[in-house]
Structures are given as structure tokens and as C-alpha cells.
Image (cartoon, rainbow, N blue to C red):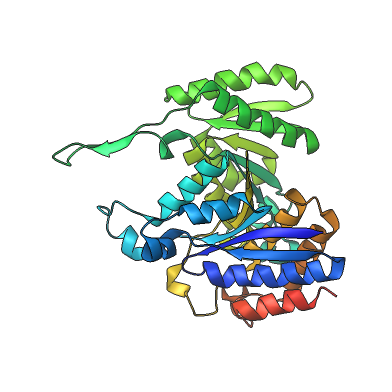
Length: 353
């Protein structure tokens, strides 16, 4: 099988962790008789420096002509520290999501048995945690009207959703719930926000179509508390863009390291697979970044984009083996021996024979 994959390594540690995911993907492809055609493209700060915009038309064309996109991370402190800068790396990520129609971000929260002691939560709270958050990705406050008045002493960000947008993402969440434990949590802030009341109304209208699924509605602040107090209580969670951004970052650390969590962004065109961590610019070039989230994102790519389930499972298996045997980077190793980014990638690829 020929797999045409766009590679958007991005900024900071992005190129380093993506390189390791490519190593593992190439090893899997060789074992199972596939051919991967990697096509690199620029985005984020790297694209701003090169051509003046964070998601160039040439990059978009490469993404549209590919079967999948493997994405690293974007962002650098020089942009974060200059709020007046009109062009920012994150605009490239938003533009990519909008142009590719990536309306749903699928973020699993996984717990690894060998790392229970690394979690900031007590092991008994998380040992059976296994849930998926489906985050709406192309609407809400991130894409609404925003601006400043002439005196620049007043700012606004408008949160907007349409009924079709909400219905589309909640229906997708129900399909995931039907395939899992038939439990769906719809997270909103319906006691305060009008957009959240729309979400709740749409949810209530759709739940009648899925009587097998137990549907619950949870305010976002209560959901944030439950992730810490009782993460095992979730199965499939669906929520709007900003709430999903915050809640999934919170959920990612219960496994022991944010560097472990993968994600898939799916929608109308080419799907994008990426770790949920940021660009971590302080670690750039130091060979200390954790590549496992990106490697597991590649596993999701084999599963979701290519329906190659055996290949995806083998990647997950070698990742679990590396964690169990302590072949990990410093964020997980603690006082034990830490391996470099490249060494972990090499070790994972070498296990696939």
C-alpha cells in the first residue's frame, strides 16, 4: 500500500519528535510491505520566517494532496512575548483546521500500567481511567470576531456556534460512544453562556436518537474537577473548542507526562495527527523531548487514516514495552536513567522486526 503523508514538523521540538515518529512509521511500513512517501511542508514560526505567513498556500496544497498529515508543534516565545504582533504561529494552526475542515479533535486519555506511580494523582484514582474527549475544532471563541478599539483599552472575542456545527460534532461523539461503553458526557456552561444553552438544546434533541447511550450534561467547572477526582467516570466527552482545549491539557497530565498523549483531527478533507503538547522551545536541540506522543499519533494515523489496525497496534505495543522497560526520556525517568529523544526513537524502531 502506498501511503502519502505530509510532514509539518513546525517549531521548537516539533522536528525532533516528528523525526522519531517517521522512524517508527518507516519500520512498520517495511515490515508490512507498505511504501511511505513523506512530503515536508512548513508552518508556524518556521513558515513566518520563510515566507511571512504561518500556513502558506503551498503547504495547504501539499496537505490536500496527501492521505494524512503528521504534525509536530508550533509556537516560539518571541511571538508569545509580543502581544501586538499581527502575525502569529498559532494562526497557522487555526487556518489549517479551517481550510481542511477539521471540525473534530479526537484526544484519548490513556493510562499506562508501568507509569501509574508517575501520575500526580493516586494510582487507585486512575488505574482504570480510559476516556476520549471529542473537541469541536473550527468554531467558538477561537474563530469568532475579535478586536480592539482605537484606544486599545478595550478588547473583545466573540463566541459563536450554529446548530449544524453543534449537531455535527455531537453526532460524531455518539458514534464513538456507541462503539465504546455507551456513555456520553456533554460539557458546557449552560448556566451562564447562550452558546452553551444551544449545545445543551441540541444534545437533548439528539439523545432521543441514541437510547442505548447514557447521556449526561456537565458544567465545565464540574468536569474539570471530576477529571482530577474521578477520571474513571468518563468514557466519551464532547465539548466546544476552548473548553476542550483546556480540559484535554488537564487530562493529559494524569498519565504522568503530557508528552505521552496523541490526537487526531478529522473532518472534511485530510486528517491531521499530532501530539497534544506544545513546541517546548526551551528543549529545542537538547535531545530531551519525549517523542512518544508523536509516535502514538502515528499509530492513530495508521488506524484512522489507513485502517491498518495491526500496524497501529504494533506501534502501541512497542511503546508499552519501552515504558515498561524504562526506555524513556527525562520527563518520565525521574531518578532513573534517561534516554535521549533520538535514542528512544531508535529503540522503538528497532523493536519492529
